[in-house]
Every structure is written in structure tokens, then in C-alpha cells.
Length: 322
Image (cartoon, rainbow, N blue to C red; front, side, top):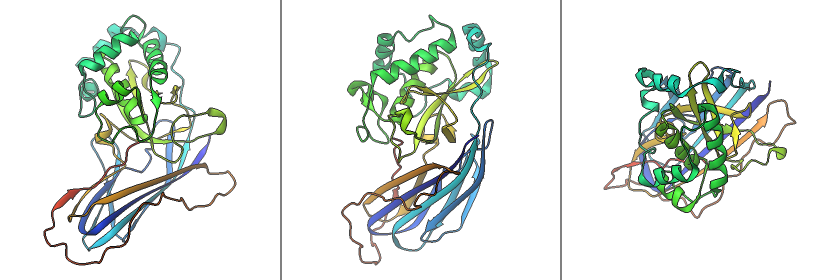
């Protein structure tokens, strides 16, 4: 079973001083099923005491507050995770029927994963796209999910920076390109329309040269899980045309991206900000590699630290999952 070492750096820089920066981070990998988080640390500069809690979806959330005036914020998350190969769908999975799937509607634990959410809406364009793919109940549930995973992979160009963190699914459907966040949202929307509970997964993917993954190696990743009776949650990665493997490292689950951003916060100030992110996932027993992650440079010079005057509370940027 592989052990992964993960280093995830987030850097916010402000063009004017800010204060009272209250931030929450969902960066600690989950411990469940085939995955165990053996070590985790979160380091914040400027220094801040961190606390943590488990949210209503079972994700570990770290929070911190920086009351003093500052012009940049660095968050470094490091983890050691053990992942077993996920169990393959049992021999019974192909025989799961749509009648059995429909019984899930009466179970309250699946309600959130069967209905629209902030970024997952059944738009007219989505319904047209479903017809184009023939996404219907004309095959058994598992076969339908597997076919849909491949159809979305072939229908969309993987194109970093082609959408925004808050882009509606219609943008990616219209342009036929996007990133893992977009493709996961589109497949979730279709799967829910078919009546199968489906949830968004935020995490990391360990890249190997021989796998030819489309997703970015230096970023967080996103995929989805669908629930089938007597089988459980099954992971699908439409960006890379994969079912979830031991290379998929799960951090958080939710109705869509809005529930699980790696970082989210507010601050007091009138500053414009830039956000840079770097991720490195390596085998823990692999030869040592440099710990430093080189974040991209962007035009910026330190401002003079002084009172911001007409300060106001602003939302901190969220990173898009590539």
C-alpha cells in the first residue's frame, strides 16, 4: 500500500494592509475506508493559533485569525497519508437495478446528494447535453456511470484557466473545455438528474509518467462519488477517465465545490489580492526531493504598513481546483 507525502502551499498577497483575517482551511486528508491520514500539520505566516473541528459532512476544518495588520499570508499544509487500493465494485454491482436506486430517495442521508446545489443546477443547456450523450436509464446504473465518465472525458478539452472558481456549468458546456472542478460538477448534475446520489470530492492525485493524466500535477484535484445500493460510494474521475484508485487522495466531500474549498476567509481592508498555489505529492519512500515549491511570480511590491482608513470586510479568494 502506498504512502504519500503531500505539501500544499497557499500564498495570498495584498496591495494594501489588511487585518482581522479570519480563514478556514480544508486541507487535512480524511481517514476512512481505504485511506488513513497518519500525520498532518498546518503552518501559518504571520503566526496564528489554529483550531479545528469536523463539519457536518465529516471534513476536518482548521480555522485561524490574524488580527494584526499584514500584507501577505502563507499557509503550508503537510500530510502523510496511507492509501489502500479501493475495493472494486462487487460482483453484485452490475445487477443493481434502477428500482433499488429509487428506494434511496426515501432515505434522508442522501437528500443533499440528489438535489440541486449552488454549483450544480439542471439548466436547459445541461438537459440538451444529456440528450446528446444519451445519458439515460437505458443501461444498468453502474454501466451508466462508467459510460458517462468516459463520455465527459472525450467531450471536453482539459484547459487550465479557461473558467473561474465560481463559473456555472453552462460556461464549460458551451465552450466544451474546463478543469477538473467543472467536469466533476457537470457529471454530478447529470447523475443527480438520473436519480443517483452523487457528491463532490476535493483532494489530490498522485501523478506517474506512465498514466498520462490530463489534470495538473501542481494543483489540487476534484472528482466525484456516486452511491449504489449494497455497493456504497464509488469514485469517478471524468477529467482523466478513471475510476478512483489508490492514487486519489481524498480530503473533503460535499454537495459541490462550495462546501469544500481548500481555503476560504474574510478580512478587513480595501486591498486587491493575488493568490498563488503550489502542490507536491510524492511517494513517502521515494528518494528525497526538494521541499521548496516554487510559486509563480506576479507583479507586486510591499506596500507601506499604515491604517487603511475606509476599511471594509472583503471575501478572500478561493483557489480553483485544476
